[in-house]
Image 1: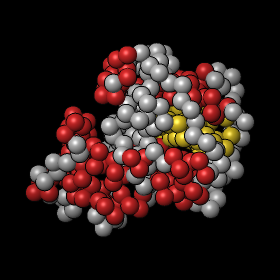
Image 2: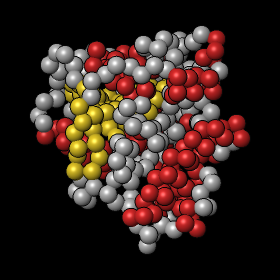
Image 3: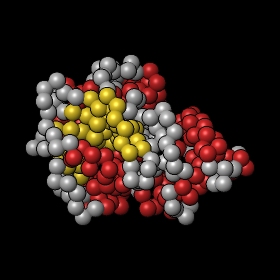
Length: 319
């Protein structure tokens, strides 16, 4: 599949990657969207929450929408995408990963970029409702990596899953971590660390035998957080073992359904490995678009409709 020639060219200020990233995350007005929460209890006695939105017409299509690192289903980018999906006759299941719905999860472990068993549980829940003939997977950043890994690591999955969209996706986790560690990305890393350290400190009270104040005080970067918490909590030797085993780039050649990846050239979160142009040229199922602009999840056209939202609908509805 040849690379998709991008037509995205935003207004002047939004050609700056940092401006488009920050505006879209912090300043874009939140879209109006009705959401109904359902709690999914998992086999390990933990839970996660799903926020549902429904088309006005009865729909036999549903999109499972996955947020990024330390996001949730109320983030503007999730609600913006969900609103456009609903308006185009898709129901939406917007997922809050474990510990991301405003209430701490119950276990020492939580979520990570490759925890596909939780996505599998969500898909099983939807299939049991027996309402949908077509399932689409839509993921942003960490959520995009997770869904691509899910599709590529399995020899088979439910036939109802027809298409997938991954936006601003760190296909190589180590490379993206190193990009975020640059001085120019200090503000983003600081923002992530404030939330992650807060969650770690809360869990310390519940799991004092596994989490200590001395370890907490060493968490001054995302790499250190992954070494201190993410890796041991989820069964990996260290942060680099976690990155290696969960990066979706290695799973792309095995993906069997049409999958669209939208990664902006000026996203400061992504490394060069996150733009696999030669691989995409050789594959029928990987559709890769690399606009010059867009930052990280910042594909602004208007506040009401982002380029990424319009392209997602266009791709999901194409045959």
